Image 1 (cartoon, rainbow, N blue to C red):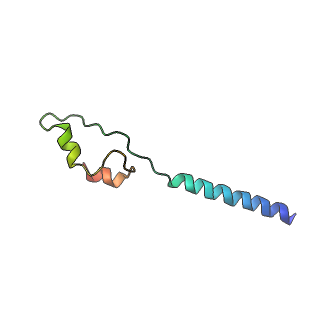
Image 2 (image 1 turned 120 degrees about the horizontal axis):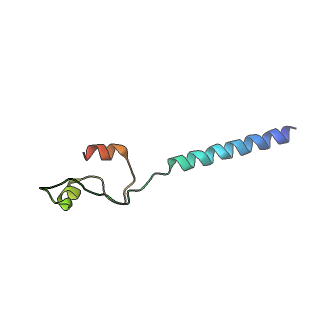
Length: 66
């Protein structure tokens, strides 16, 4: 009985660790689209932004670029 309990606890711990590892994976920015600009070229806007294609998605960085 103890061995069965130990196996269940081990499986639960492994599942929790796997879920935590999956949650820590970050999304990567694949594309940035500039819309609504009439006076400033898209390249100028993209050059002034801190957020770049290929970087991890971080909400605080996007907020700073507004």
